[in-house]
Amino acid sequence: MNDDRLVGMLSALRTERMERTADQKLRARLENAWTVRETQSGIAWRLRRPVLVIATAALVFGSIATTLSAPGDSALYTLRVTIEDLAITLHRDPEDRAEYLVSLLEQRTAEAARLEATGNALAASHVRDIERDTLRMVQQNLPVAPEIVEPAPTESPSPSPTPSPTASPTPTPTPVPTATQRPATPRPTTPTPVTTTKPPTTTPKPTTAATPQAITFTGTVKNPDGTAATNVCVSLFSPGAACSTVTTSATFRVTFSGKIGQSVTLYFLRSDGTKTYKTSITKTISSTYVDVGTVLLRLQ
Image (cartoon, rainbow, N blue to C red):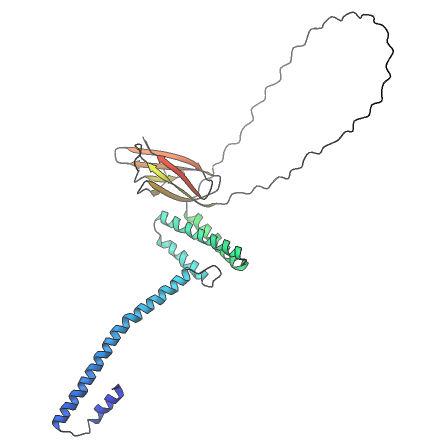
């Protein structure tokens, strides 16, 4: 029984005259039918509402997942980059932010290389521009390794030559007369051809300056007795600098902006209130990921 029919029947009762008993039965049937319909409609809506909410949430999360996995040649890649860049502010810890930025840089570098390998030059150029912007963000948010200028070697003065002693004159011996011999006929000599060799010309190779990159140092810190050192302040470049990270286990990880071939010094400090343990290491950057090994603290 639909709503229109039920309303029509109820309206018709206004003008109809029935027996009291029949009227009460009919009214009871109509009221029961209306109550049952309202109850079924309410249950159906209550069951339908969570389904709609779940479907909407699935659609939203599916759209976000599709956007965050969009490749560089997709129209959604720019939106993906915008969302990933906005997420930088959610990483409040400097070490977490550094790791997140480095992961973004690695992803975008790999994506640009993939597009170049497939021959999609237009999309690869767009991703390379985004990669350069990401590198600038990495350099702005990471500590920069200082340039260490080594003093130029000075030439030592060469010693002046000392005069050699002259030999004393020796007496000239008296010539002894000898018999005269017939002079031999000289043979004509063929002149030896002189060959001139030109020195090899070498073209000097242009020197290119190293480009700053995101560098990560990892290693293990131990106490003088060989146990794992926790709550160790790891500083970059100077002993009085702020802690780049504080170890919660025996391992540490710091990320900064540096160049291949640079020498970088890390300082380690731990104090338990009565004793202070310090040490420092200097490493040359050979790649973007350097494992410094085990660092042993010393009692000061």
